[in-house]
Length: 215
Ligand code: CDP
View 1 (cartoon, rainbow, N blue to C red):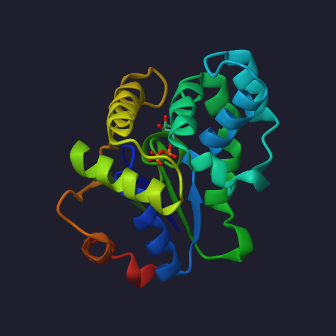
View 2: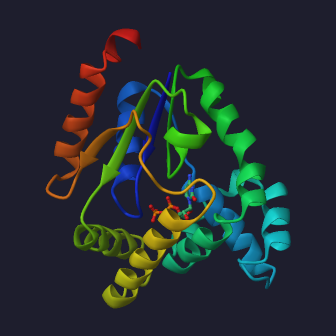
């Protein structure tokens, strides 16, 4: 079973997806970490994240065991990730890994929860369930600051606000795999929901879609 969770930067999709995955006993893939890992490789090679050749090479040679590297969480890596993510060759290099994870979840688990921007539209258009998470920009900025502070990373509110805005525009406006809900996605606005309430709402969506009976 495949559950696709998409949404803009810091909408809370990662927290929700992780919680759902552990509740259901599913594997979890944060596809943002793939683009962040490519961005880190490119920056470490002193190349420009807009350089299609350098970014595609980093994507082709990506070591998928490095996705937990704490350096990936820095906001400047998120920004560089949104640049490499607009390069078609980078996206195509990363597609097989994502689809394979969805089809054959690691550890022989019975399902996968995958979060990102284009999971419901491009990576897994046949997912059993699609959820598109939103939240107001102000709330997303607050959540991102808390997340960075918890990780001991720098979190300047002004800089975070402009970074979130910039990434939203870039992710929505790009030609390839733009951020947008799939036609059959369930919309979940978490602006006024804490983690527990968002989790409960998501469970209600799963229930209404008859998924619990199939797991
Ligand atoms: O953590 P946050 O929601 O801020 O971002 P992320 O999910 O880690 O993604 C970082 C960047 O990668 C995004 O701004 C997107 O440009 C890109 N991305 C994408 O294009 N497609 C995905 N499936 C996941 C991320």
